[in-house]
Length: 592
Image (tube, rainbow, N blue to C red; front, side):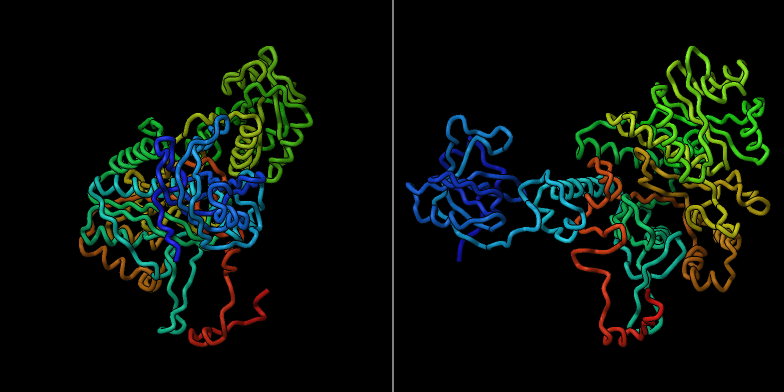
């Protein structure tokens, strides 16, 4: 049996190792036959090393090397020698040396891969890469991403452990509770007709740990949500979960900021400026139209309701009569944008329900547009001052329902910033968003939790619970990075009566409360400390750290945007015998 134990990895050898006898194992990356000499680039997770097979030195090895093909697994022994003068490769860490092979053993042959492994820059369709994910890993980029992910997880664990936190694993098989998304259900064989739920988060468990007196808990845990997917979302994802007792929100903010400073320093080799900027939820909507703004974009929204009210532009006046909102967004030096491009932007915002896009260009400190005649000089100067307009700027204006206006301008802001390279990519912009509403209306205008039903109301707004609950602010907070929400948390309710009040406002009957949360409500009655926490989306963090817009680039075995696993061909049907064991009957008529 061949001895495939390695003395070195393929990316380790340097000119200092000359004349040493070494053992390497790995995959054939490239093979080049120069008539007499055969060159093989040998690859492992650490890098590449060039092997040379010379028939004059070892005819038997040279004959074996003739057989080698891409992705065969081999082990070799040989001597480190310098490359021929003028043949060094400065683009390889091992580019100054090569291995003169004395022994070669073939450990495993390989079929021709469905795509090139050695050409990492080659464009390969994502579906094909996901189907052969194990081959995609060999191409290097995904391996590097997973290595960085390991470093980040290790640093998080070290930082939180040194800060007095205990890592505790919470159950995967648990009970369905309303947390804002659909649950993945697991049927029970022992209790026919009953189901476990995979956790959307360890929310209740970490609160129970605080009731249990653990004081400081963390966990890097899997979570599951059966919801529509996007490029920054997966049905199963990893979360850095943190909970602490007898602390204030300020303590948690400082802890989180110091943790990110450590991550940036040790994993990204960057310095991070703290403290992070803070804005309230309402400020974010007013200035950016979204609760997760990318602060690297130098464009804000401005309310023009009062100015438009003094104009003679009937469309704006009618919008105000219908209780709509008029907002504007400046495009710095955007006067070069043509009418054709403006029409394209008008079509772009139309997909969000906006009926039109008004605009002004600024020339010689005056507004130029077909609608400028409806605004006298005084009103034009008010607009110029409010929106901080300069000659050469362009101003877009939307007049519609508040949420429609905000959504349209938010998307237009990001679209134009990316298109015109207005995003300052030299920095990362962290933002704490605070004072979210405790409740929001669902499609039936009924109250539902904006965050989750265990979030504490703002102490200044508790009196509004009985009269205007929709105006109550919560003690919740999000952490936004470059326009992505990467963390969310809150001060939890620790008073049983307050928790009962929230449940009643959510129209839960005593029977429903008992069935869904009876164990938790009971636990609150045994002396619950004030506690708070935060959950950070590890996958989304890594996506930003590694400068990719696709979350699947940072997950070892991800699902597609349709929540399928192309490699495992899952989800899949199961046999009738297994269904009978679970007492499950599939109605084929209901399956489309």
